[in-house]
Image (tube, rainbow, N blue to C red; front, side, top):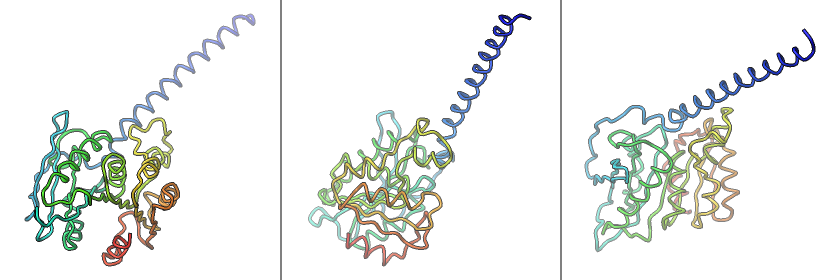
Length: 275
């Protein structure tokens, strides 16, 4: 075989290998994209599940533009009324929780004269629809409007409190609505930065949850709490968020707590009130 023939074979082999590589890469990207929902929204896979509304809670449903129905529970402190308006906090739980698994929060707030609205996510428990960053933002805005319209609530004193993914929803809401103060617990810098820990290229992240940008954009006071031993979201994320937020941020690192930050409630209360 002459040199021309050899060169032709080499070119054919090269094209063939490039084609196979492209197929492998594209298949891998598709698989990673498909698995992201299980990573970002793990509890949505469980589907609808009945649960009783706690005694004393006001159940409220938000109907999204696509027809999805999202559940929320409002807990009012004793004595709250149109003539005795109270401040309120919107609570957003982590991606592996539900509103009924975090009832210690409304108990804590209402005992201190603060109303607490627990917001569920699309696809979680009885809430219908498909979870996504855009869907959560739409629903958070709608729940804020509902809360601000309640006669018992001082709409000028509404705060947001979120844990992990919930912190991303809370700070996002704070950039769009008049949130008085913000509490971010176990927060990450962004979803691409989280996926990067598992060697997933940032451009493949379907959800952004850019907390770094949101912290900078929000002008109110922020309390950031993080467990020193957090193995899911390294404490370095909290430090970088605090640095980006500047003087409006108070950073509290609790030790030896992990991602769930099982804090002493008296210590948390003192920290929150000082903030």
